[in-house]
Image (tube, rainbow, N blue to C red; front, side, top):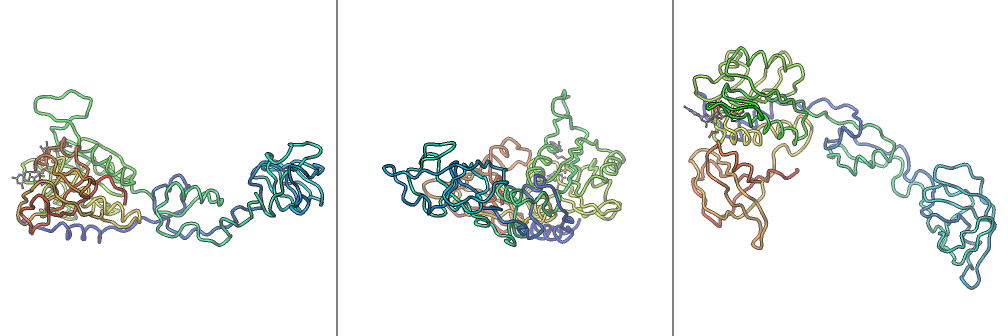
Length: 409
Ligand SMILES: Nc1nc2c(c(=O)[nH]1)N[C@H]1C(S)=C(S)[C@@H](COP(=O)(O)OP(=O)(O)OC[C@H]3O[C@@H](n4cnc5c(N)ncnc54)[C@H](O)[C@@H]3O)O[C@H]1N2
Ligand code: MOO
């Protein structure tokens, strides 16, 4: 049996073996949630021309400087400019042009008088209040100038970045693609949700759990679903899937049983490491490469909680590295433990918990038991308390480090 690896060592070896995917220009909507792989520099000013901030009349401020309600100024209206209508001549002194919000301010005009200060005249307008010079004119380059960095390399692109890039005329942005993750669950006892169960069969929760977690992490997921405990069937399924996989994740078949199909099928290849990792749950692990393209494969244990916790600890950091997202590893936050817990010596324990912030600050309340089959408890929790390998008991009230499972980072 290989040596027990620590969680940190296993993860470090995985991350060493993973190279970020090659970046390329992607349509903006595809890039949502991805990291920009370039400094995006503005090729246009924003606004790109002087334009009106109000519906009203473009004027020269000095022509209407004396306007008051009692003593209004009257100007002839020489034209009308809607948004998208750029063709108006320069405005002659002593005249006004109707102008709509967003329309280009004609040369010669320096201010916009809103409709509310006028009689909305068509041939001639009565202006009852004087605008200050420049009022309601949105100047070219006021927001963004040509050459400004709109989004810097490594920025995780959110809706506001995508909106800015589009507003600046960019149709694409270089980013690393979403990894394509193939998820296979193994086990002759497994049945698809929605089908009939026999007395000895169970529903395949894991392929959904893992595919959902991978999708949440930003991956494109292919949930292959159930493969029976037959090495030939497993290898065939794997072979069929490799063409569309950047990463393969399997569940089940990696411990000491007589039908541990994943271990049995992959061990002879010599390219996948199998062994225990000093964690609970999730002790039996495997990681390596398969196929001509040396596709990374994670072989996670079949117990649902073990599978999920293994995803969090090993697959998630790898997916983030593939996508160029940092940090790779989910950060921990401090919280006060509300109830005592015990933990096995020599194994890092990940305890399902409910994290919250109350009057006394952040707290973590353990949820349910230790059993790695307790998926109900897993779904009721939103955090994992990390108990280091050398700690065997933590008393209520002590401070612990917590992984917040639903937090973006
Ligand atoms: N003699 C030993 N037995 C076991 C050891 C050990 O060290 N020595 N380790 C235990 C630990 S810890 C774990 S974790 C499991 C891991 O086993 P496998 O990865 O081989 O998984 P399976 O045996 O296939 O299944 C375990 C368990 O999980 C259920 N399962 C499997 N797949 C799914 C799925 N897709 N959806 C829902 N549930 C699933 C399966 O029915 C079993 O109950 O091994 C221990 N045994
Ligand atoms: O590690 Mo198993 O994952 O303890 O149930």
